[in-house]
Image (spheres, rainbow, N blue to C red):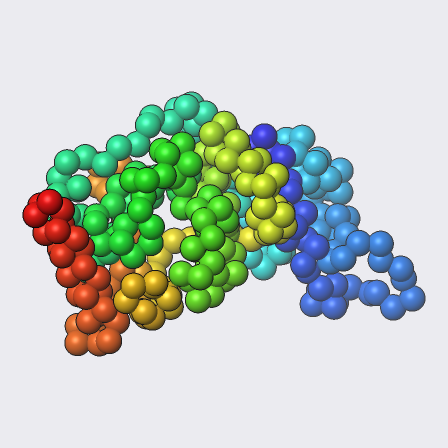
Length: 283
């Protein structure tokens, strides 16, 4: 599976290359494929056409120097380059059965202490494995979702509220899939990840289309506009942190500048949570 994924990625990137950028003669010739031909990529990378063809067909791995040359020829950016080398990386441990991820008590305490900062924790397959109350109030009631279905990438497609929550839902989906594709390079033989991709591809044509583009993106920071049903529109910045105990646990925190309308609305959402807890205690 690992080498087929690498071949598919090379094919997708090759199809995006413009022959004119490489001073290749195209006048008077019919090109049956978009982008560069295999033999053109091979020549530019100083490898044989047969060798490159076998790479694209997933029949063998690639050495570091060959990957370096291919990354140069295909003019890969940092994310695409990292993904390419991630796919080719050999793991000393068996990547097919990574341990089950759990949020340890100190991290959960830290999440709970973030009174006006929504936060949740993603596992390696975008499982939502931890959250604080404000995070659930902002996004969705994670506890009400059966654990096997509690993947952020799945919720984007299966929960109708997500399409109205995110002002730019198509952009959020595109980024989430590109990030999942990047994550998949770290565990290319993970059967649970393969099952998740297969299920979403069957259930959501948009997921299948975007997954097939082999676009990748690293996780980091950004800003999102959300339309919350209870407190209105919020413009929030998000940041990704990693757990020291398990670097594959990614902590997503949402913040707004203190004194801004969005921050005031986060405070209002936190007060609604407190009011609901007080009502329950009075019953």
